[in-house]
Structure formats: structure tokens, C-alpha cells
Length: 228
Ligand SMILES: [Zn+2]
Image 1 (cartoon, rainbow, N blue to C red):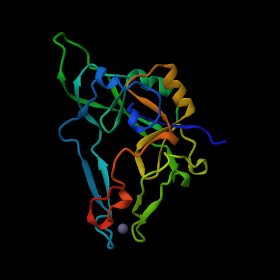
Image 2 (image 1 turned 180 degrees about the vertical axis):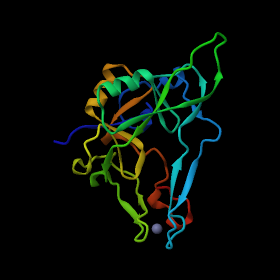
Image 3 (image 1 turned 135 degrees about the vertical axis):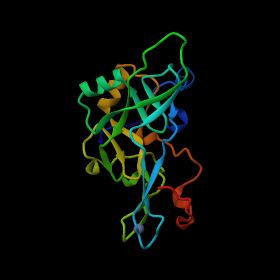
């Protein structure tokens, strides 16, 4: 029997079978956006076979604009942000595969009239690795450059299934080719549920659905549209 793993993300039932989380949190809490000047920087691999083989790195530290101070325990802006309370819980639990970097709050759009202290917020940075997904997920490496090693991974067909032999044992991790899908262990799931942490969703990895109509492996790789 495989260990259970979970996808930790925005509580949207379209993304899979929601085990924990309330889609109405999207109305109750206001998620932030990137502050002006935040961007992805492109780094060329100087590949002689294909100059489109590049890597991207986001500006750091993460700077955000808050819509208001009505925030949940977790915030999503493409990146994952947590409050001081959540960071303290995760640190106390000694979760592995994760580190916290202080977020800069550039602006609050709707600031209350009375003076308030701004919250201290942290970017949840995942450093654990699940390696290549289990083949049962349907994920394949459909392009691999013999010169620079650049790879493209296909969409998944049967959820984000973890191959335990490829996983580094971290509580928080990404599968190769899926650097936006935060996966967690059962212990993380239980701590999130028992602490009633808001504005996040927990899904069984097997239930995660490919929500976009476009599958990267169906695009012609040389047209420059394919995303890794
Ligand atoms: Zn290359």
C-alpha cells in the first residue's frame, strides 16, 4: 500500500476532490497580487541546438500588494504566502522540505481608517523533491535536450501520483516538471486540518484534475508556445 500524499492549493473543487477547505473562502478573504516590478527573469542555457531552452527565475524577495487586510491564514498569488501563526505551527512541527522568506508588503489598497499594524507574512518556499512522478500518473518526459538537458514534462492523466522511490522523504515537495503543485504528507494534512488553517485546500493527489484545456505535449515544441 502506497503512502497517502496530498495536493495543497487553492480550495477550488474544479482542481480535484476537496478533502478539506471551503470554496467560499475566496469571497471571505482577499488574495494579494504581485507588487509592481515583480517579474520572471529569463536565463539562457546558451544551447546550440535550441536557443529557446531557457530557465526562469522570479524576482526575490516576493513583494505583494494586499487588496485589503481581510486575509486568510494562507494567501495565493501564484506563490504561497502564510501568516506568522502558520509559519510558527509549521516550524514547531519540524516539517521538512520547506523554508520561509519574509514577504514585502508594498501597498494595501483598502487600508482601514484607524491605524493598524501590518501583518508579518512569509513566502512558503518548497525545497523538497518528489523526483519523477509515478508512470501511472501519465506524466512523461516528452522532450529532452541531449546538449543542455532541458526537459519538458507532459500533462497528467490520472492525478499527480508519487513514486516513493524517487521522493526525498520531505513533508513538502514538488514533482519534477510540476513546480507549482505543492504536495504534502499526511502529517502536514492532519496539522492543517486540526489547526483549522483557512484559505487553502487539501486534495488526494490521485484526484487532481488537469484543469486547462491545453496539454503541452499536444503543442508543437518549436512554436515557442509550449510551457514546461
Ligand atoms: Zn538544449
